[in-house]
Image 1 (cartoon, rainbow, N blue to C red):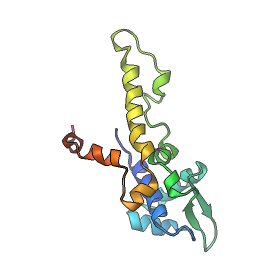
Image 2 (cartoon, rainbow, N blue to C red):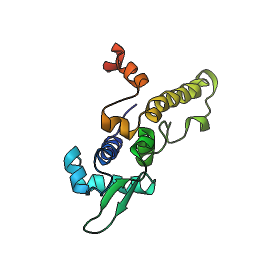
Image 3 (cartoon, rainbow, N blue to C red):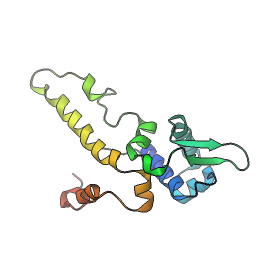
Length: 152
């Protein structure tokens, strides 16, 4: 899976919002500076996250952004879907919408399995987990496999 800059920035912004106080909103420039994200890019991402109901905003001098739900209820998958769409797409379509012929017929099942495995990780890790630096045991176990650290 290729994680785009947009998806990476969206997750980092959500984690930064989770790490801050939920009593007052965070300004875009504060989040951008804390995570090294270009302000103009972040503004667009936060707008998408707001439209998806992941963050809420307040206008004015005391305005900014908060998470719309407790960080423990916001998965990384939700954040990524808000800015990128479905986790796995093939030529802009969902795997279950694609039909292959002949020797490639089982390829659809490969794409569905890939999506299922991505979901296992991204649905089980919340913004709160990342902000606290405490990932679920099953996710940490995956990182202990030597192959996980090698790019192919």
